[in-house]
Length: 209
Ligand code: ADP
Ligand code: MG
Ligand code: MG
Image (cartoon, rainbow, N blue to C red):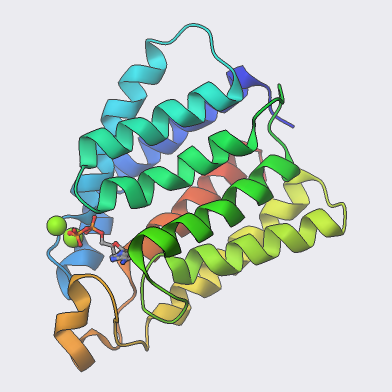
């Protein structure tokens, strides 16, 4: 379980991770997209980090909401709401609670998957971030059912997200810019799915796994 200060600290670590992975994430997007995914995520992360640092008091809900809203406003377009919704749904899942644990994480990620699918129309197998979000949500829900603690649940979630990213490699894209490449996208991992994997991995790292 994390308290609100820990959630704030973790979100700053997540922002630093996206800033650090800027080039790597753009490299994946350059092969099957337009090469800006890392730049986009880093721009949103930098703005969110600044706002978090300047916020003195907040609940878990407030901090996730701040990150999500900042992604929506700084990334903009279609991708702002898609990536922002992950954090906005995590925020909603914290409603009424002073702490962030397996319940909030599993519900937040499951709701985020639904939201992303609703907004973007993608399904599993379309070679998008949904391919990482879906197995992650499933692993977390399963862990919640088994009453695993946050640490144990995240270990499984990281593994599931990693497999999700790998599952995008042989696919032809049905959504986003990569779909115009048709078969040429085969053999390359999806950038957005990789971003989701790194997010889960960073949460896991924060918890000291
Ligand atoms: P853009 O394609 O506008 O340049 P980014 O490069 O930031 O945006 O993000 C690209 C990623 O967004 C893709 O790798 C994919 O995972 C994800 N994506 C694209 N379209 C969709 C969609 N309709 N639903 C969900 N995710 C999508
Ligand atoms: Mg792009
Ligand atoms: Mg672009």
